[in-house]
Structures are given as C-alpha cells and as structure tokens.
Length: 177
Image 1 (cartoon, rainbow, N blue to C red):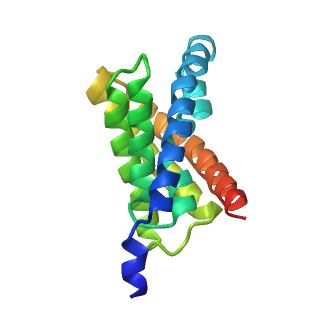
Image 2 (cartoon, one colour):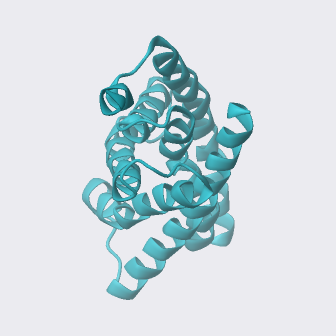
C-alpha cells in the first residue's frame, strides 16, 4: 500500500509542479542574458561553471519538494516548457535540453532508490545533467571541441549543477518546514 501511495500524485503535487515550473521557467529565461554576457566577457568555461547548473535546478527542486518518482523529470521538463513559451533566444531547443536534464536528474534519484531527498541527493541530481551537455551542444549547435575541452566543460557543468542542486534541496527543505 505504501508503494502505491509513493507513485500516486495528488492535486497538491500537481500544484507544486505547476508553481515550480512557472517560477523556474522564468528563472531559466532570465538566466540567458547574464550567461551570454559572461560568455562574451570571461569565456565559455566561466559561463558554464557559473550558470549551467542553474538550468538544472528544476529537477532537484521539484523532486525535493514532492519526493516521488518522476518529479525531477517533470519539474525540469515543465520548467523548460514555460521557458520555451517565453521569447527565449534558444527557441525550442530548451525543451530538448530540459528533457535530457530532467531524465538525468531522475536517474540520480533512481540510483538512490527514491529513498533520499536531502542536499546530497539534490547535488547528485543536479550534477548528472552535466554528463549530457557537451553531446547536446554538439548535436543541436554543432559545437565541436577537443576531447580535453569536452571533459573540462562536462566537469564544469557537473560542478555547477551539484552546487545548484544542493541549493535547490536546501530551499525545498526550508519550504517543507
């Protein structure tokens, strides 16, 4: 019986998802400007380290609040959908990124068997999307990099994601109190 309840979403769960999607989707949208400015001034690596993890925050925040399988994926995808509805410079690619990032965040919680939702779990769920970013950048934007640079970018996005994932879990903990 307890397992069935774990998978069943309530109206409150869907409401929390909607709020997370709108708030984080707007954050995603407004992150584009400082990201592009940082990239132009300080370089792509600094921009990725500072901002990419912010684009991974929807999954850990939704999952840490709802604590049910699928919440990380839905939180990230729905936030990307909200961002896509705004006039983003990245167009519909945000939905592709959001789906991949949400899946990777979800894998983080699945690896923990949906039993841990704290700061460490948020950091893991925030870091894992960084694994796919170089491949998405190549597939969607034709960004070609040397193998060494791919690894550096991957590690930078994972570090950024872990930091923001931990922040998301901490915010969720504070909101749940």
